Image (cartoon, rainbow, N blue to C red; front, top):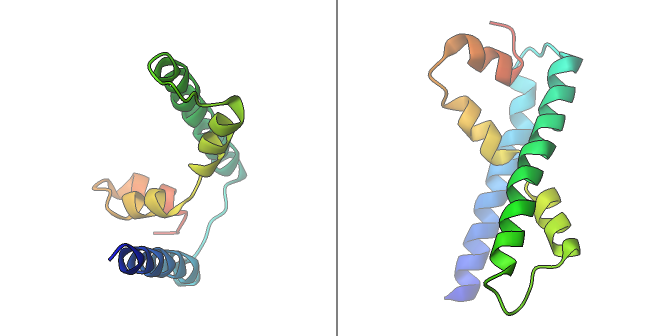
Length: 105
């Protein structure tokens, strides 16, 4: 059962990333470098402000501590785009949705 669920999870993740990769061809793109740079910087900052303080708090209650190397991996591994893309697709605000999807209305 565990192997079956892992296979299904892998298949579902593959479908999401295939959809994400193919969807770029269906939009007329407007590239805004400032949006890209600020998005990356703020994502990195937001992840760091969550991962590091919470890991230090959790380490006070754990026997097996989270190392700084593990904290870095948790910080870096959260920068995958499928969740952000799915959330942007379901926004109710039309103007902001176009900006997030970087497409021309």
